[in-house]
Image (cartoon, rainbow, N blue to C red; front, side, top):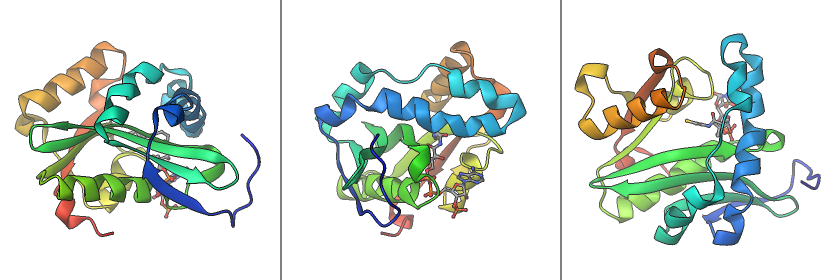
Amino acid sequence: MPPSDSQSRVAVLLATQEDGVRFAALERASGEVFRQLDDLAWIADDDVMEEADHRPHILAGTVWVARNEDAGVVGFLTAQEVGSALHVWQMAVHPSHQRRGLGRALLRAAAAHAREAGLSTLTLTTFLDVPWNEPFYVGLGFTRFPDDALDARLREVLEHEARAGLPRERRCALWMDPRAMGG
Ligand SMILES: CC(C)(COP(=O)(O)OP(=O)(O)OC[C@H]1O[C@@H](n2cnc3c(N)ncnc32)[C@H](O)[C@@H]1OP(=O)(O)O)[C@@H](O)C(=O)NCCC(=O)NCCS
């Protein structure tokens, strides 16, 4: 990734299939932030979504990128419409651009789409108590589903993640009304 200075402009746009080619490397790089945590450092070396996993969602118009005018794509959010929900499967921001508001901007783009599509909720699953995961989303207005209030879809997402090796006791599902997110 070419260097970019902190003043370079970043736009949030719908993703193209060409953008999707870079997502796996971008997600891998973004995960380096987990090395700060002794018990979850291994997440930095865990599997990532493959290019093919993003393709149908890009085609459906539910994937957004943060594009830096110098460095190109520095972040993405991949989501899917499921019933009345927009489910966020993954989001990642390159370490060179983390903590500049791009994660928030990508979520705002997803929320705007959900509102325009008449969807009633944004949902996602994430790590509990990791500063850039659950607390970050709660700060934006997301609420945690108590485990006994999970619907079948989200319970299956969490169980699938557990079968893939993520520690179930550290994971949670969150939701928010997209109309409650500004921007
Ligand atoms: C989650 C992620 C996409 C957020 O992207 P971002 O562009 O850094 O997000 P923002 O700048 O909008 O907000 C980040 C907020 O998260 C928290 N945060 C992020 N990184 C943090 C860190 N290293 N330590 C403490 N808090 C952190 C802070 O609250 C921060 O807000 P602040 O900078 O105003 O204090 C990014 O951290 C990332 O790619 N992480 C690795 C992959 C991942 O965890 N994806 C989410 C899967 S559910």
